[in-house]
Image 1: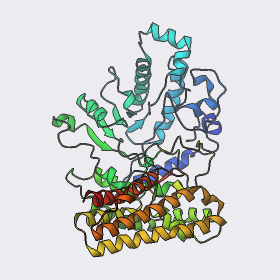
Image 2 (image 1 turned 30 degrees about the vertical axis):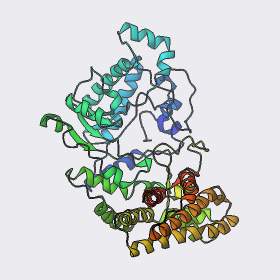
Image 3 (image 1 turned 90 degrees about the vertical axis):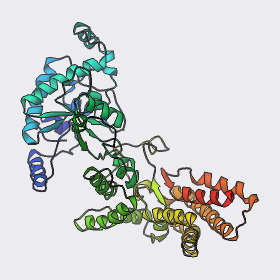
Image 4 (image 1 turned 60 degrees about the vertical axis):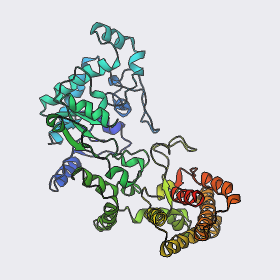
Length: 470
């Protein structure tokens, strides 16, 4: 939230006290500008707007009262696009905000309006009939054009998410695509400037390689140079549902460095192994400037370990990552802004370096088996096998760890399977009577525990397939 001197109820009632003063905004903009960084604000309208209505329920499409939403999701509250008073308010507010941000671009969001308040409001339905607006998409397009006029008057170029692209929208806007490259290509071919965010959602905890190989303009995707010129680039997005001040750095860094290199490099730059080599060095440099992506996970471990040594938990986290995509939602816990984020998936980082090294060594071993790699793989597996007993002793003294005992159990069983498979591979004899049990163990290890997953499972499964294939 940002302080509004014109409409102070917006930040005083709609922020729980978490807002930037206008002076702080000016400091942020100046600090960024001195470092070649542009600050583009986004005020999401007409949906995702519940907090607006706490202080100004007259803007909403349904009567109040409203309260700040603490749960996560897409909710019904939406601005009323039929009232002249809505546009008078937004003209004053957006004018005030435009003056704070000197950049040429201004983002209005425009996404995920479910239209339920519009459907239930007879005055809005009557307005749509009068203006021959056949559906909610047309009504939102009407709203967007009114907002575009306000921003144009303030010297800004409007940005919005995919949803603002409607047949009657002029091409002097920018489309930010969260839906994917098909939507981006469609908009560029129609003459809109575009940028890609699909594939750069760092809150989804996908590995850096996933982002690094996601080129916003792959060869052959746009035939004409004119259309290609409309692709401005991309933007990484860090949505805030499942991060706190303690965890946000470990979600942003160092993976965003890989996204930056992707966007600043030719498509041919695709050496993932070398990217990871340099990313490790970048992570250390980022720590030197004060970021907490390396130290805070250990701080969370110390908190969870209740004053005990953290080594068994550290060993477990070598091979654990948070669930990827949107899978963390809809599990046993219903998240909200009031819930602390200090459990296993918050300690775990999206790119578990040691697990990635294990998988890489396994892949090399399966291509060309040799004793040095076999020894290294077995050494790592024995450490993970033996860690389970140590972890159980720790969990006896640290109640916060008890929910993750099953993932330690699964790692112990998986490591035993891996060791047996390496022995079978060395002898050249596969024990068929063990195969079913091994496959059951691998399947169990794939199941998430505490919204987290073991990320060496595929490497063990590849070894199993190789052993029993021969």
